[in-house]
Image (cartoon, rainbow, N blue to C red; front, side, top):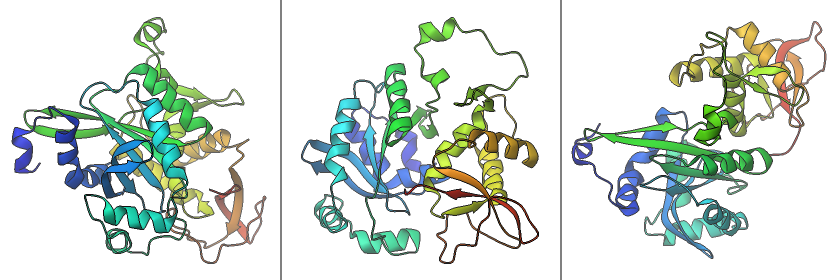
Length: 309
């Protein structure tokens, strides 16, 4: 922690904003999310966005800050979302330069990520809430929005003894239910991992589904090898352990993931040539040939994106 955190006290959202502008990227990086803050109090046709950020793919993160329990904010977030959807790359650059932070987006992006600003900057938007607590109703709506249209994320911050900590708030349905509904639920059998239901009715471990939903949206490659995804899952599980769950071994993780994606409209299980080394987060200039079956030439298990991001 920096010396600044010794006397932390957020009386207003402006106080929280002042602290997070220089520090948020570092906290999010510890959680596996690399962002560049490009604006604060970003002016739109429907109000001002607390913080605006961009990731390596060019996706825009609309960040709403609260110093009390986050509730009744969905309408506000959706209005911001609609305002940002039509912004072109050129307009984004101009607006970033005019914003109070005065960010030179093209140079700042290349300095932060080591590559030029994508031509498709602002191709998608992610709704983010950062608050000391998320109201159950707000959590349920954010979860639903994430399933049907836009990506959503929620983070909980804690200030204790002058120290600031940030953690990602799960929006899984079980956690998003109001307290009165949760009390009526039976406790899971001890040592029996909590599981999430897929459309096929197969019980898939909740941490596998949570991992895939959290990370697959950032896969730039059209094809990712299973081994690279498994390595990312293992590291993510160690960095952010799910309560009561240990990381699955490779074989079990493969069965869970394949069952979860069996009827996916976005990802298809395939095989690529032996020796293929495909980083999860890097685009492919020369994608390998793929087959739906294993043979002598194609025996490396992988997944291919079948829909356009």
